[in-house]
Amino acid sequence: MQEQYPNDTDLLGRASIIDESNGRRVRMAWLAVVVSHKVNGVSELHSNLMVQSLFADFAKIFPGRFTNVTNGVTPRRWLAVANPSLSAVLDEHLGRNWRTDLSLLNELQQHCDFPMVNHAVHQAKLENKKRLAEYIAQQLNVVVNPKALFDVQIKRIHEYKRQLMNVLHVITRYNRIKADPDAKWVPRVNIFGGKAASAYYMAKHIIHLINDVAKVINNDPQIGDKLKVVFIPNYSVSLAQLIIPAADLSEQISLAGTEASGTSNMKFALNGALTIGTLDGANVEMLDHVGADNIFIFGNTAEEVEELRRQGYKPREYYEKDEELHQVLTQIGSGVFSPEDPGRYRDLVDSLINFGDHYQVLADYRSYVDCQDKVDELYERQEEWAAKAMLNIANMGYFSSDRTIKEYADHIWHIDPVRL
Image (cartoon, rainbow, N blue to C red; front, top):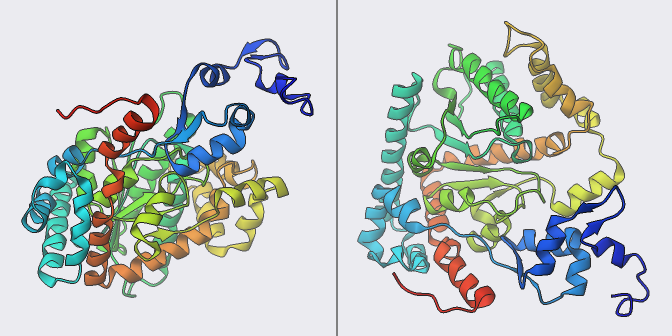
């Protein structure tokens, strides 16, 4: 290696499987790269970040070893089984073969302006929302309006996935309604679900906050059906099959550069939800496929996130300059949502304002809130919303796990797939 790269004297140490810099430790990721014949990321962004940062030296040493295979989801489970109402509409207008060739969904684009098909897709969504509303009423004793916008974030609870930013918007919305309860508000049901690692204190703290916020908002007579908040416990694949078909809006709001791919983004869009998200993971490719007019993109890019870190990110400045953000964080920190224990969330607020806000929630807050206002504007135009939902469904063909598996077979394992 020294002969091949004589001008890079530190390369040998950086690429060594044994880390000599801080005691002797085996770099397991390095070992995996060295012994593998291929190394792939699971979205274009993930693969690019991998060769530009983490494995930059190995990408130079083994330039043909790194590749990309974007994740996919199976349409049999996540559409045919999970959403029989929508599947019936697709079967009527496209035939049944989309189950094994998801690219056939593209034909749905030709039907987007047909009122009959538009109405059928809308009715399938409403049927799924009524089913979920019934479950929420039975299991959680919360009554939600099926005609409200169902805004859903279901995934592992983690700071990088930024459920906390979602909560900040929920409280912002609550404050706006309280300030002008007679205004014409788009009714919304914010639905959360997911589990935290057993020892992950902050993730469990965020779940606690969601439930405390829900308790205050859902019991405020001034709010009524204008806003409801639901945390569905014991999240599972079976529950996902109930929730995903009912979603109007899919929350994919991780800090850019932190999500490898994500697959719930694909499942939601396949079931006719519009996405609000950052340019992270597979969201980037979804944007390419569905078009910028049919997805809500906000926030800093991965490059801007890194540049902000290099410059010295100062979250307190965002807190001091943004009145709505200031109000929300003050409410959380002073116990408005935990009156029996006013100091319960001071550490959480401190982590954002005073201790670095590692996942840049405050930096993206304003862009996120403004983007949510655009969501409201579109949802009031129901026919246009339904047409965009159909365009999302129609352009999900690329995100089939069948395509993913074929790419692994063709480009990595060099084997012929067998039809089952």
